[in-house]
Image 1: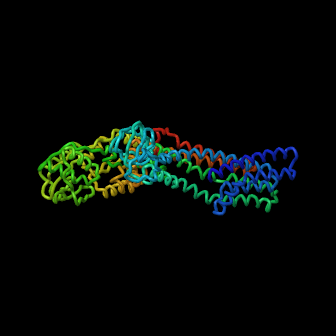
Image 2 (image 1 turned 120 degrees about the vertical axis):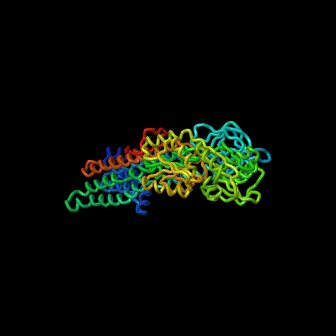
Image 3 (image 1 turned 60 degrees about the horizontal axis):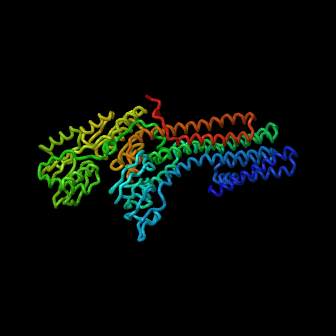
Length: 633
């Protein structure tokens, strides 16, 4: 319902309340005169205007909700002469409905705050200076200017200027990040004190904040497992209750000569009390709150089902490079067997065509040593092993030792050097042609400072086993696993082998969580029960391939997300218990003839408001570190 209609409904509620008060006052002083009945009828008609419309519209689609049941109850009460009861029922329902609307609005505002991150206009230089241009009119490659204190309107790469940028609305980072020429800034982040000139790298529809908006909206549209079960139950339960209420109204008067008015009244009370409104809304309000809190903390969860699943994982599977390590490897050793300068030029030329993180380290090292004059052509990546390309018309290979074993040119001193590099917890990369190995590089990536603590937290919270899967060599992988206290390690894996290992692990532990960097781990992330990608500020691959994306590469967000899932599940269970318990109590009262219509409305709508407020507790940012995945040890 739009805002205009809500205002009209609120006005009608006030009019209905005034008419009800007037009618009751006249009823007490003058009795049920025709004029008093007209005032009562006016109060009921005014209060039911929107309620009856929504109820009948639902019935047309075989959906029996509280609006339909209250309409029947009010009209039924009026027909059997319970004028005060009918008017009070409508009044209480409208008041409760208004309170419910106001309380639910808090959750919507929390989501809206997330979705309204980027400004509508950006500053673009024109002939007469800076001009405001709508972000939808700005294309890739155009230059925008971001003033101090402004939100970044579009994803861009800085060309001029230095500033600290607050990325917390997107990533949850606690500290602003320094940005300078070459750095990427994301739409929705907040510029500090410096003026920045940036080249737009994504148009409005593809910007990071637009993708987050879309994915959050899609996530909230997806029903969780609990929500689907509750909705299926309500779809069957409501028609059955209507049938029972009809039987209560008809059978005692027909078969046992009981008074019609008493049993019709009881059936109306039963009908109102039995409405499953509170049960139906018990889950979605909690899920929406949880997804909103996660997004505000830099964790993008693609659906309520994943929020529920992450609360009780059996095992965690981690990629190594870029996940447990910082993903910023550096060349520590360069061993040339032939033509050292030529080796560096060839290495730069080949890696200039690659986006692999190890390749970037090799490229930067070669560039620092003066390389960069040669160009490579015909590059072909061999998944999990390396890359081959033509440089000056000659074929070269760049990759791990298994790549060169396959080419049958792995021998002699190079094999010894590779062994020493791997023993020092380094990754060895070889360069060679079709006849000889030309050079060897030692590359080392630092372990993330919080990795060991996060692994420990996950174990404390109930994870039964922690695995690491990597394409790196066995010795390096074993040293990382030992340092981080990881239970089991699988190394030298091709991408397809990672999927096989995940399937083997799933045969033992059905609920698995795979954590990867979102670039080369996409197949593995998709195969696990839940895939968590290290988003790196919201990379497209991370957003697309995983069920959960960490907008900042912070491993601490993993136990946070697990605790949030645990809390959401607990709140859902509490809400279902509240809704069902109150229903049972008041159904027993109704069956005994001890409940009245106004009590039924208060019980139903009061329960709805109660579960809404309880579900909104998922918006709280404080989550206990003592949460557990399960009771098992």
